[in-house]
Amino acid sequence: ITMLPTTSQQNGSLSARDAARHTAGAKRYKYLRRLLHFKAMDFEFAVWQMLYLFTSPQRVYRNFHYRKQTKDQWARDDPAFLVLLSIWLCVSTVGFGLVLDMGFVETLKLLLWVVFIDCIGVGLLISTLMWFITNKYLLKPPSKDYDVEWGYAFDVHLNAFYPLLVILHFLQLFFINHIVVINSDWFLGYFVGNSLWLTAISYYLYITFLGYNALPQLQNTVVLLYPFALLVLLYILSLSLGWNFTKGLCWFYKYRVQ
Image (cartoon, rainbow, N blue to C red; front, side, top):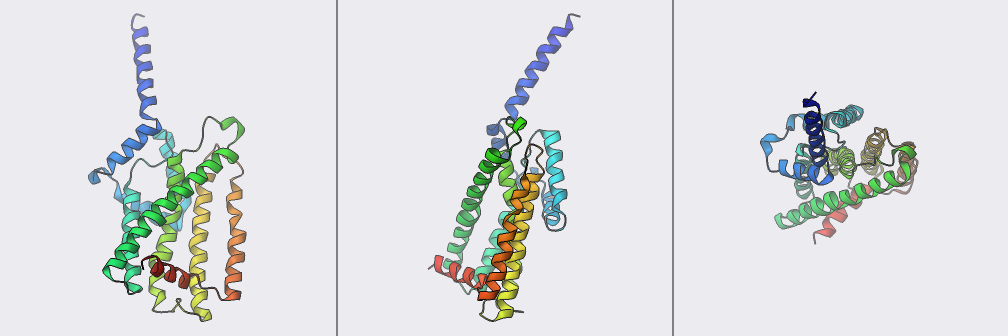
């Protein structure tokens, strides 16, 4: 009987420590600290996620649900996926520099633009926007105390961005000057190029929808699929009017490093 109060106090103390470990600041510190310890990262699991984002993205988000049950957080606590994504981004950007006949300095400028503006800057903007929209308009009324983690919104963006990156920044490289020259004004060229854009953005929209649809505290997430209608309309319009998105991207990349 005399031991009961002592046990209760210990449990209360452990609960306080657990609460401290699960604050946003503690999670961010743990994530950033693991960036400096490559041996602590699970790259094999990150590669598994990258493969399944193409073939079965639902399985990736089932793992996020498992993490919530075991670690009480939706967002990744292992930066291995971000590290591999950064490597993909750098290698593919150098590939773009080679395909577009850029020199060393121009390729370096392009790399800095793509990493810090296109990836980090735009990624932070989109993640913050989606975090705000989901917490403001899509939360179920009883779930106001269980908001969407910003870190999870950033992870959803990274998940959706990866297939888009591979399609537009890697696979497309083989078609710009070879096989089917999509950096041209003939129909087959911009048909193949614009179809790659359609596929890439469709992946982004669908994986984004799956990410937020996996959260039990959200409702009406189907609205995140509505942009598909605009995307298909824009695709048909681009073929009708001869718009070449890949040619525009190549011009933009060359312009920004001048």
